[in-house]
Each structure stands twice: as C-alpha cells, then as structure tokens.
Length: 254
Image 1 (cartoon, rainbow, N blue to C red):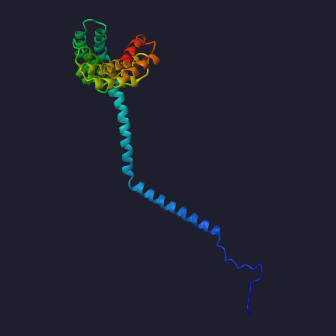
Image 2: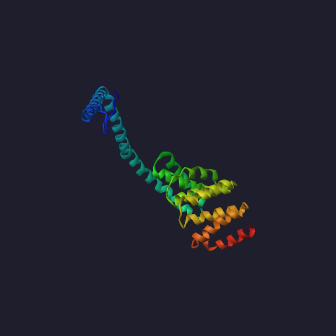
Image 3: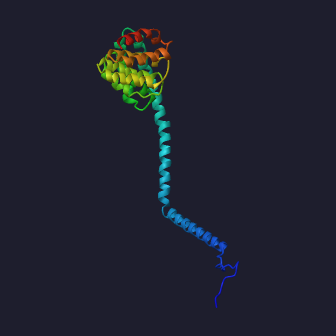
C-alpha cells in the first residue's frame, strides 16, 4: 500500500550536540596547552639561568662602563681640551683681525711657548668638542694661508649642526676648490652651504658666490636663479644691496 507524508510533517532532526560541553572541552585544551608551554618555559629558564643572568650582567656592565667612561674619562678630557684650546683660539682670533695673518695662523696651528696648537688638540683630544672645533679653525687657518688641500681636509672633518659654523665650513671648502680651479666641486659645496641653514648671514653670502661662479662658467640661467633668490628673500643683506647689478649682467648675457 502506498504511503505519503502528511502536510506539515518534518523529518526528525539528529540529536543536537551539547555546545556547552564542546566549549568546556576546548577551554580545557587551551589551558592544558598553556600549562605545558609555561612548564617548558620554566624548564628552559631553569636550565639556561646562568646564561640569562650572564647576558643581563653583560648589558649592565656595558651601561655602567659607558657611564663611567663619560664621567671619569670624557668629562676630564673635555675640560682639559677646552683649556688647551683657549690659547690656540686666541691666536686664531687675532689672525682674523690682523695684518700679520700668516705668522699668527702659524702660531694658532702649531702652538708656542709650550702650549698646544690646533693640530696638537686634534691629535691629543680626538672625540672631544674642542677637537671638532679645532678642525674648523685649522681648516680656516689653512684656507687663509693659501694651503687649500689642507683646508679641505680639515674642514671636511668638522661636524656641526650650527647654522652659521656648519654653513661657513662647507662654504670654505667651496672657496678652496675655487682656488684649485675645481669649479664643479666648488659649486657643489656652495649649494651644500646654502642648504645647511636658512639665515640672513650665510645664505645670501653663498647664493652670491654660487651665482658669480655660475656666471663665470657661462651658466647664466643658473646664475639668475641664485641672484633672484637674494633679491626676493634677502634684499636687506649686504649682497642684496648690489644684486640688481648682477641680475642685469646675467640677463644681458642670457
């Protein structure tokens, strides 16, 4: 006899699994895994304890060593270098404002009367602020006594974020390259001096030098770029007072 399904008849569902039981089992597994991991970690720490403590001890020794070095070596060295620098720097400053430049720059570089010169400070107090400044002063001393290779060497070793000294050092290297006939290198360092800092003293100074050098090289477009920046941004500077003359010259030769 044929059979049929009554309307509304639903096939019985399989017995549903207990979700709370599954969740409980999963949680137990997670904690079991964590316990095992913790136990393994504890075992590893226990078996490697002497290496861990040794590593920590090494780090502590390095930190203490650095602090001790700064306190008991570099601080006294900095103070001593600054004292020695005073004598050499006096001769350098006198040379800048004197007519007997060569002899005074020589004393600044090499010292006198048992006192250190700039070169001695560089050799004996490397790593100090005084030695770094001595590189600048020595480079400028060589530049002013027409020893251009030495000037480049010492000025390149001078490192400073100071907006004035940093720019003057780079510009001084540019001046030395000009004297050596290396105009491409000179222009590169003038541009470095311009980029080093934006101020009303060094920026128009080296914009002007870069412009004049470009004009001499026949690159009038580039010269105009430098000259116009002086006119637009540094009109009140010493270079800005006469810049119209140079702009006119560059436009004529354009």
